[in-house]
Length: 418
Ligand code: HAM
Image 1: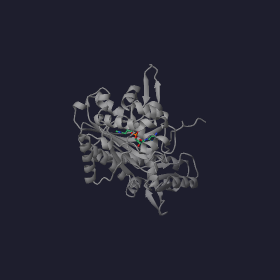
Image 2: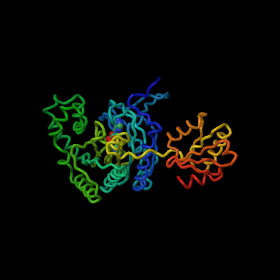
Image 3: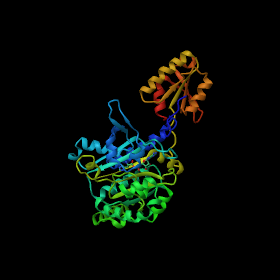
Image 4: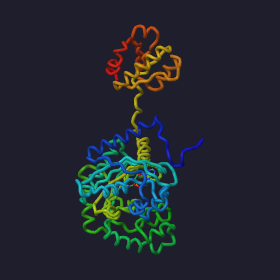
């Protein structure tokens, strides 16, 4: 038998309610913050991610699902949602429309990573992007939205870490300081970090290799190099979050794994989210739209990994209860009763009542067993006598009490009890 590709997961019907719960919580939180859904293609021109996510990132260098289509064009399955939204925003001229533009998405994303707990090759993100607002209030609203989403899921032990990585002016100075610090240790760095040293020194701080991590711990911190504007912006974000009751820690170690960020960056972390620990990450990215060839528009956003959310929800015991079964199972004792059950079920469905009938020609006992397994709230039994009387023997599966209900009363009876 052919098996599922490595790093992918099926969601079986018995688990789908968990996903619905996260998706509904995401949509409801987005509604409260007035973010509206955007849908973009699952694949884009490869260049979008190369230019957007950045060519010094692991995502672009090692992890993209890139292929030539039959027309010889290089396309890539989206490794994240931000670049596609930025492209759509520019392509539809939305910078000339109502600002701020606030959009959210629920998407699958693809990264060719080494699979482990909380790290998949196909995973799912709930993300949000806010365009057009340069002030600290936009950062604070976006972070507060992310925080509210996690709280609405019932999570308590997820900690918010925030940092500022400055703008291109102050970061240039910081990069010089980093290079000075790492220069005497070049031969202790991993191969990737030696490239990062030349191309994007800050990315060295995010390296998972033990030797690099040890060196990174003593490296200069971006917060000491922020220019006046970036410092004021960061202080204002902190103040707004504090006033709004959003708990956070300033963590100079947060640099993010994508190149488009400037100023505020943040991650929500949990010990229960697998090896990486980050459930949700984001930040400000004021230069991305221009970098993609559009107008210069300030932007901020986040994305949460839904598989990691599920892991954390399980660890924190806040998974919801499974969906209830159908309202009614209509059991038939013989062929004419089964036929009647089929027709009654159709009539009930038409008025919105979930019900089931026997499709397997099972004995009445086996039908009861099946109804019980599916969690049916009532079982309506039909036999020769019931057909003659025009009434079903209705059994309440919770109380085990039974009563006669006329066929034409079935809908009212069930609607009054479910
Ligand atoms: P990211 O940090 O690469 O940021 O991903 C966001 C979240 O997606 C992570 O915190 C994690 O929960 C989940 N995630 C990432 N990779 C995997 C994986 N291989 N398996 C399972 N879950 C994963 C972004 O994608 C940015 N686009 C976020 C953003 C939006 N920044 C601004 N706007």
